[in-house]
Image 1 (cartoon, rainbow, N blue to C red):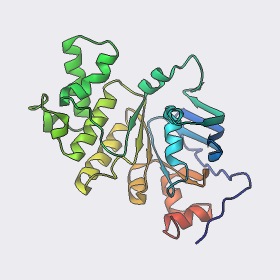
Image 2: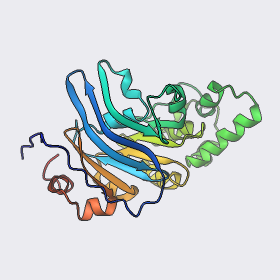
Image 3: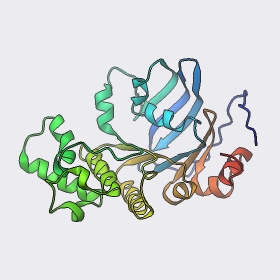
Image 4: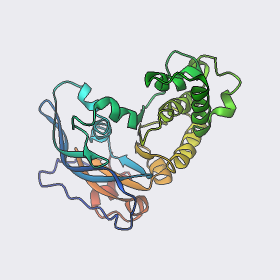
Amino acid sequence: MVLKERIEEPKLRVMNNANWNKPVYQADKLNLWYGTSHALKNLDMTIHEKEVTAIIGPSGCGKSSFLKTLNRMVELQAEVHISGTLTFMEETIFSPSLPVELLRTKVGMIFQKPNPFPKSIFENVAFGLKIQGIRQKEVIEHVVEDSLRKAALWDEVKDRLQKPAMSLSGGQQQRLCIARALAVSPEVLLMDEPTSALDPISTHKVEELITQLKQEVTIVIVTHNMQQASRISDQTAFFLNGEMIEMNSTPIIFERPTDSLTDDYINGRFG
């Protein structure tokens, strides 16, 4: 099946009228270019607090570009140009009153492959606190334990906190990275294919963790795994060729999508 890039205005189909959670992110005619390559095209979408929003679509469709725009990591790439509006808690993320350092404290990032620091398990979780200038030993110890508990890792590592983080399994390392992000009390966690490098058992543990964490933080996850998106997300957005084709509650996206392209992708007819 050959897909041609559509030149008409993208068709936005959002039916979240039953959603009363307040918006965390709102994009309005958001566009992004890498040089002359138009990576995101007129995106209009809302991400609500304390929900899991999954972004699905084939490789190169703009999923990761959008995710990295949410904490301005995309600006680390050369020749990036952005137009339109993107707000975080009703404030534009490009506003001088919202420094990028503060934004990234509020918005944590979990990457495709676990990336623990070459430090001890304890120091990995404590790192962000110390960067913030927190020095009280009892405060740091309390937050480290609390963060490891929230990441469902405490019972597995409580007797070896001074051991190197690299001594942990891949799945444990990913949960350690989640604990490290949680330690600075973020409002949002961005996850870019967080289980793609993990075995099925570790994947299941991370998915259970995501379901628990949404009681406290908003989660946006990019995933190629359709089953994973259907299991853990409240809302799902389907991206294609830089457009958001459709966004809706996850059951509707997977059971009765309104766009034929969404239906074709979910049912494996391309991608």
